[in-house]
Length: 229
Image 1 (spheres, helix red, strand yellow):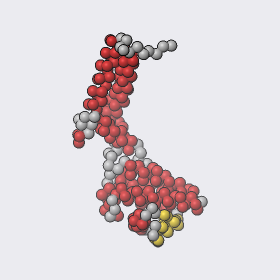
Image 2: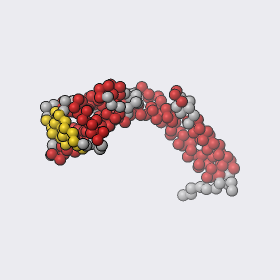
Image 3: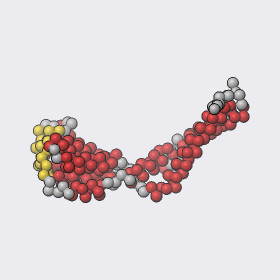
Image 4: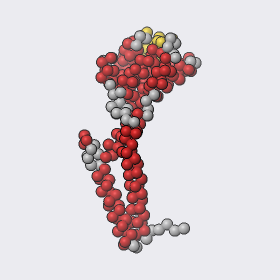
């Protein structure tokens, strides 16, 4: 039963407007048939990618391990992956012996890290074609296999008690390979280049949230539900 028709009507108008705007937000109004939600998602992904570029710093740290010999035992998840891992490692100059899904690797840690970071940098720049040309593998697959190689190597070095070497491998995985894989295909853009779009999105979000809140408030008060102190 409606207690206050004026407040109920105002709440209904606000709620109707809220859903009309929501419908507009999901309409394909942007290039490539994107809706506003998808467009803003791409904007914030581009800003996020720009702030997640750590590869130059990782290269400096990797260079400190040049000449550091490592002997590793790596376990692949499948025979095809073991073959791909052998290809990646062999092309970087590592000595690799493969038995089914297990690889025995002798490598220069600095060179190994440098090779992985070079590929990650290409992928971060969305140049997957260069990675494919280098190994004859699909670019994201190659980076996925680098993730497996470096993660398994870090685990094996932990077992050997070589924790400093394990840490740099872990850093290259989490700050180099993973961002390059996850952000592949997204353009990195500094936030200041999109400042007004970001500001409009944040202000619009606040207004839209308050709008919905007042719509519900007036509807509830219109049917006689009030918060009393």
